[in-house]
Image 1 (tube, one colour):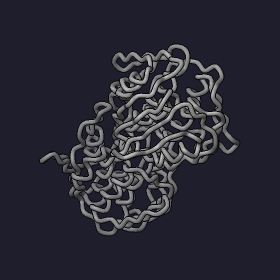
Image 2 (tube, one colour; image 1 turned 135 degrees about the horizontal axis):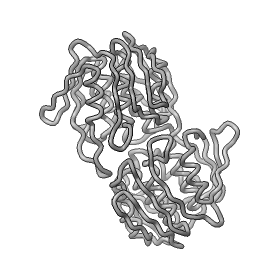
Image 3 (cartoon, rainbow, N blue to C red; image 1 turned 180 degrees about the vertical axis):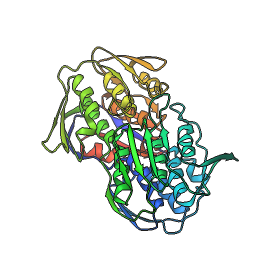
Image 4 (cartoon, rainbow, N blue to C red; image 1 turned 120 degrees about the horizontal axis):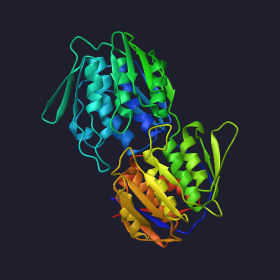
Length: 422
């Protein structure tokens, strides 16, 4: 099992390229199940989650090839049962349910297990697919969805307790593109990753409008064709490196970003006193650390609000920022597992329910720490950059789920990091 050794106190300088979005790639890869024709998808990040998705597609019968960030997939003859042994490794594998149901009129997918950052129920996915005419049964831990007579358009409300569901919106959208008639998704997720999926589907011949708003309209078509597509930049990876630059940087430049997607993250970094300068095209930015940073209050919210996937990283920055900061996570109130590990490094954080009160300290100190999930692991790496000594970060497989070669990118910026195997 790999772990990362990070020697703190080094100043980050230079330029790094941001990878394609992991959260956009997964449903786009799943959407290739909707056509028999070849699809070419560029800038698919080389992370374990996309590798698992490709394994699932291959197990379903797809012919998939991967080379230098480009994936070529042909789903000419496929089955309708996603294998448990691969599905259990990644919750996002649930997004094969919609396209399988639409094309095969049957989908068998294992019920997602528990999640360390809190409850992520699949009931909204099922409710949406049932509205389109699917019948849902649970047998032996499997979700079995059938639509013998095909799917029919309907009005579907994706409103959840903590806001819209991104993968739920994706699943219903992918199912609806081949449904008879018109589907309207109310309270849809508006994240850029949903828009990217809609753009991909439209390039395949789907008729989708309103993606990026709370109301998406899909007019079903008889079939889809192959296409080529380039995945959007990963806004969470970009936000993570922006935060790294604010913690330990001196003029770090990020290439291949999207300024619009980073608005809430940029505002939080700037409110803390740091400078973010974008080029005219908005696809490159330079972050300069503040000489007198200050604490901020943050509340996570669905897009275009501050993303819950950046909450842990910002907590690491605020742990070494003078003053008192208050962070509230309205999406996953239990998502503060990283705080206990940050406290082992000397952070002053008090967690109460879905809130964390952070009192900035002058310096963190190195300690052996353990990642609990993907974004928590990133937060520990960022904290280690600002710590005195060498921090040992265990369970590195979490960070490999969603960050493409993060250790190599940090090395490019001058960080002293080393991946070792136990």
